[in-house]
Amino acid sequence: MANTLTITDNRTGKTYEIPIEHGAIRATALEQIQDEEGEGLVSYDPGFFNTASCISRVTFIDGDRGILRYRGYPIEELAENSSYLETAYLLIHGELPTSSQFREWERDITNHTMVHENIKHFMDGFHHDAHPMGMLLSTVGALSTFYPDATKIDDPEQRRISIYRLIAKMPTLAAYAYRHSRGLPYTYPDDELSYSGNFLNMMFRMVEPKYQPVPEIENALDILLILHADHEQNCSANAMRVVGSSHPDPYSATAAAIAALYGPLHGGANEAVIRMLNRIGTVSNVRSFIDGVKEGKERLMGFGHRVYKNYDPRAKIIKKMADQVLAVTGSNELLDVAQEVEKIALEDDYFVSRKLYPNVDFYSGFIYHAIGIPTEMFPVLFAMGRTVGWLAQWEEMLLDKEQKINRPKQLFLGEAKRPYVPVGARS
Ligand code: CMC
Image (cartoon, rainbow, N blue to C red; front, side, top):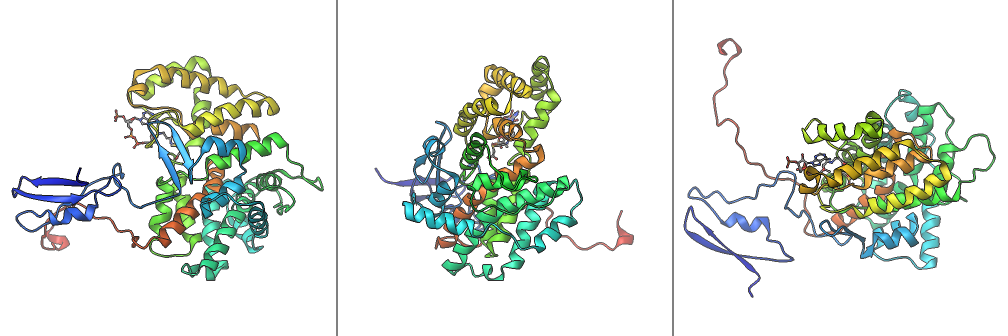
């Protein structure tokens, strides 16, 4: 069986044979298929529904079967057995660490958790009700000005230290954004705590000399970070790669990825879910709300996914975990509303026929909410977990010899050439 595609161009009657590699044809192979004027064929794919922009070895998703693996390891096994920092090592290095590699990695990340004192002045400049995602993306972008050597992206040592710094400082910046919005003094990192334990310390420590995280909550947060750590070529990873392809420092590229994540169709969805459930208010209002969604009045946030046409495997893990966390933190009345939404939607033909299932954001907000994280911080926590995925994707892109500055084509359907008309002569 030939691994090729035969195309006949009915405009010209010519036939072409195009190689198929890894189940794909190269879009540039279409250039040879020219019309009478010599214009080569291009593929048109707004939203990238069927276009692979890169070869990747980081994350595998089978959306129809609800499968997610980081570097070959099923997400369920990582959530059950790994820690966020170990998973971060796996995503960056491609293999799980030995104990000594892990100790070194943990020490290197922990060494970089502090931020320059001037960052506090940036934070202080924000209005008290500034959205923390806006604060996070600005301060991450600003980090590039503190580390000018980070522009040396061809130097593996510089890349390594930028990766440590970004993973290490993200929780510090996230917690600072929260503390600023509450008018609370900033809390310095505690190197004796785990990655997640330290984040809780920087968020919630008051006057106690040593913050002791509740183990169940620390563990739940760590699992949420693992579940959000990467998701192959999603909108923000794509932003990281596109911006990174012009070779700025990784802080600037990460700021762009955070901006992409901010939108309600991506990382902003977890926040939108809780706001939506609050609006629905009670179980008895669910059916009329769902009717509104079906009439196209709004989207059911936390449902649907570009890739998953089955239950999002991350949502399954979170749903199970929600019960364990709520057992410690106390119940949440909105959970009943969420469960009713899920029940009605999963039985309704509108959602079934479009293969719309709960995604990672449908239940994650409950756990954040239960552990005392305010709603506007939800996308910030998503960004914190996803930073390592962005960095793995960024470095893979830089080391891929085939990658070039990203510059898509367009189909131009605007005005043809026409002469300039002076203002007085315009009708
Ligand atoms: N509620 C109601 N209808 C929906 C929804 C939804 N949440 N999602 C998709 N649809 C409908 C859509 O109207 C369309 O119907 P029709 O064929 O009649 O026009 C059909 O399903 C296909 O939708 P689409 O917009 O073409 O699908 P997409 O792949 O472009 O969008 C999505 C994917 C995630 C943006 C979308 O499902 C959505 O807006 N969901 C709500 C927001 C959300 O929860 N986002 C978080 C995604 S998971 C976290 C992450 O990785 O970012």
